[in-house]
Image (cartoon, rainbow, N blue to C red; front, side):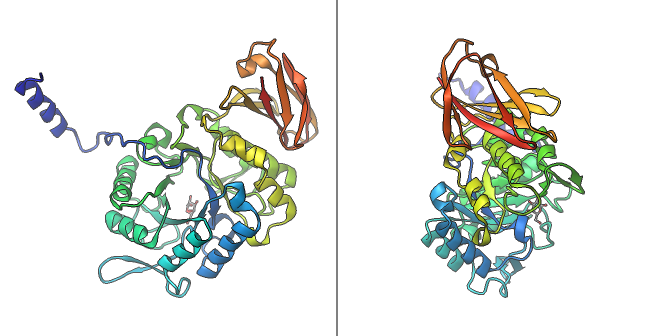
Length: 393
Ligand code: GLA
């Protein structure tokens, strides 16, 4: 039996916890057991959002086969906001969203999809619209009333707030809203959210913004290869319900070749990254659709084990990434960052397999089995291309 004195000292210890201590761990909320899949308006449309675009995109999510391939969330990013009303309740921009957010949410839900929205932990969003600072519970309640299922929560104009505390407040507000709402933390990796955010949200951005180029840095944005390099050490932090987020997809936006987009998509699948398409779904061409809806690559992303890939070798421009899958298989990506086609190989021991273990190898982009092998496998990867394999003993 716990003595009165012991109980008292426990209580005292809890009461004197400092305000800047880490918040107590939340229980897993049961959401995002696999990385969220959906679409977000920002990469293609930036601030040019209105209800016609969102409805058209929801329609296209169904007619294009994106929904059937697993994409669920239709997320309106920045610039949907109008002003707060006399009660301080946030309202949409009435010119862009004349039917209101509840009606738009109903439309999205009627298509068998889920509704996502964007706000910011600061005074204003990055696009200068009202932020949620000081209105967290009020905004969460409003989102729940609109039928929101997913909140992307940004970090502009956040002042001197501690990121962990600020996101914890919104996380608690969402939990109190009475609706299941996925929390997508977007503070760009600044305070190393992989060390704390699994107690607070379902996914966390690990870098600044992506831009539609294979490689390079522009202002606060990075190309695909620069982002990939920043993910290599983060594999221990991903698990079901809680994911590293290397930012939304650029597939189909026109700044890369089809080969490069295939590599971008493959690497995101290896990284157990959220697959949030960022292109014009209603107007996408056949190669874009073929990449975004490749079932075997999506299955790697959505593997229930929820383990993120490790880079097991990097020799000059050639890399090998390995992701353990449920059932003992491995997904392997052979990546060629160089300017000419190259032979890339890997040893079984790099996948933690005994060298003699026989395993079936399947090429996921070719959609064909390439034999039973043991010890080592090699293939030719195109310039800026990948060979993506599933290895199953
Ligand atoms: C930040 C985020 C982006 C996008 C914009 C919107 O830059 O990182 O993903 O949401 O704000 O203004």
